[in-house]
Image (cartoon, rainbow, N blue to C red; front, side, top):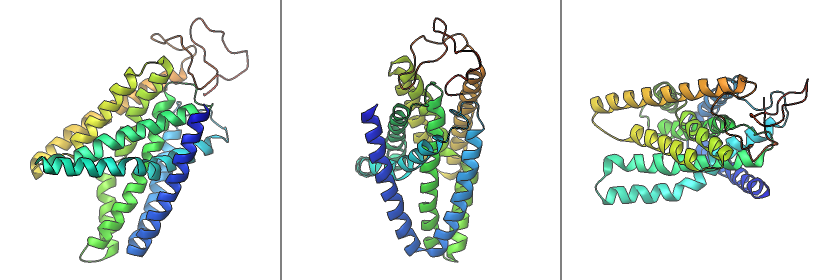
Length: 297
């Protein structure tokens, strides 16, 4: 879709501008924190992309065009998502504070605009690139979009931790990175992948229901994760949230991997071809020619 390609291009360019601007200001604020963030972020991103690409759901293995959509997903999911969420986040924080919902301020600012923005970016990327012709590709694109958001956020938080640490920038940046990676590994990857699963199936079925439902699940999990409580209650609450979100993504990944390995698709498939691609081998449709790979595998 031409409109989707234009919007993805705009989000990618604005995302690149946002990333460069904030990285530049971060480097000025704390060169040490910035350096640690770039090294840690590069390693973390490489690990996330390697892990995500191992899934049978990864589209079109061996296609060079994957590099383009991955770059767009990372930039749109980082700087692009920031431009989409900054004003709503500020407004929601001010509203929550005015209403006395101080403990929920971070929940509203993080859970609602961030997950909705990432789900929108996933939908646009699915429609903009022709290799996305399977409903489970939404989960893969969501995971990459979430990876871009998470790395960008971690770099900024790492620089903030470096500046605020009373001992040294190195200690503050390292502690902040370690805390964010260990306490909630792949947090935004999981949230965006959950929403992306629904977006992919919504486009496939031409029914907005799955996108609304799974995006709401991502918003609710993020909202609950950010909600502030006393230390003991906060730990217990986030333990429950972590079990819920990691269990959910494990189930979805297993289901998607099973679908991706199945030829023809198993029971429960609808017969409407995915709008971004040439269709695929559902019951009642022509099977692929002998010796040809099914698109998107």
